[in-house]
Length: 570
Image (cartoon, rainbow, N blue to C red; front, side, top):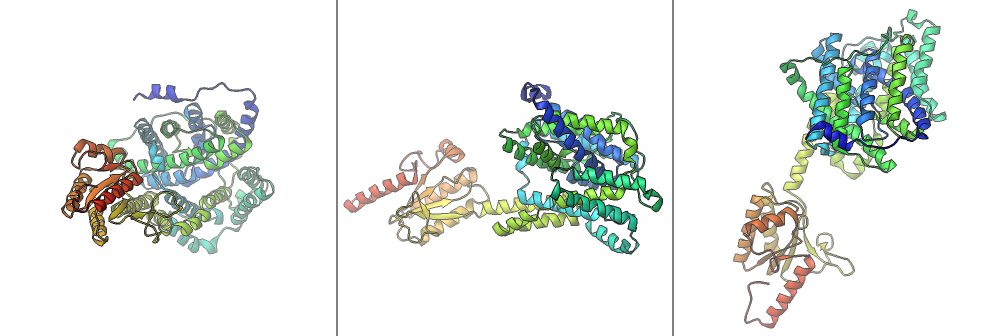
């Protein structure tokens, strides 16, 4: 598949309506008011100066505006992906700021390339790969890490440690030597961002807090009292350049880039799909993979870092009434204006205010309500969520996610290896068949065992299926026929086929007939091609359980009427 024809075919084509411009301009200004402080703050997670966070908002937003499929999604720096990038490249940079930027560019381009390849091979299904509990646990871990990671900025001490436990220990060591003016400024900014939305919910509180903190720093000359400021912010736009990397460097970053690609895409798709559903349109996951990939390459070549879908800024866009991706264009133009004309003002932003913005962002990532719901509905899913959080806090972002995903896959394999099954009957007034385990009063036909196996019949559960069915036959009273309800047996491999043949032969040796009901899809196709069990029509295969029961009852009536001439086939 060629990329350019694919894009030309799928980029939405519509005529821009003049009446949309007013709302798009208003939404763009509102989003920019949130994007600027958060982008600067998120750059701090990796250790970048303010302008790098703003660089990550310009070219990526313009690219996504051209090729993206979501009308509301705002892309840009994201707290979770920034934390993952920091965990990936900070140890390799060894304190060298230039190498840190270089590695960040490489990772962004790698993530972009992997995303484009994934979109071209139609791997958009990965959006459903991370389950909801794993995503919640991952975001909870990132949120807690962000909270602890900003304690040094808020309390005014320097800490070279990273990680949740080291961050807590560093806070305990330095608590007595906290810088009170820094703490007062940071706590005030945090209080403003918490209290103002209660009275003015649409107010860009992060921008207001940063502006007020900057005015206080300039008016009171807080830099003379030891309050750290953002400092000089270079004017102008980033120089575009392609990062150079050796084979070994690419190989060492491949695992982390793959993990960042998956998490970044899943997070963006979760936001894009939720707002698309709210507005009544669909989002193509494969298209979004390519669009986000191109936006990330744009971030890489503009000396920035990996971007993703931003749920808070997308919510602001939707709240104000943004109609199209013209909003992203407006945001990018506003940020360009800030870098060109207001760069000196950015230098007065206190580091403590940025720490407060990040602490609020970290708190916003923690989802206690979902955790409570998981505990009520599924203890295993809740444990998986907590384990992901502990893994992110204890061993790092990517290893923690991989451990949780591995456990989820192992549980899936276990559930497929030992799935639910049931013996069926019927109850007066209830349509269809019911499980005897839930309805002990259910009726059955004498000598007929109706069995359902709730999983595909594959090589790793075929023996379990055979053991369960033959055990139930042994427990049944004078069984004469077994009807397998195969509606949940959606797939079948060669081992499963051989097992069905063995079951048929074993039952036949005991004078028991073996038939199927509701056999469809790949299982039917494989049985049809093999021909090993016989011709796929009555009395072997029935279109419904009811048809099989009726055929058995007719056969049974005939046997009772002519006991001297028994028939081997119902």
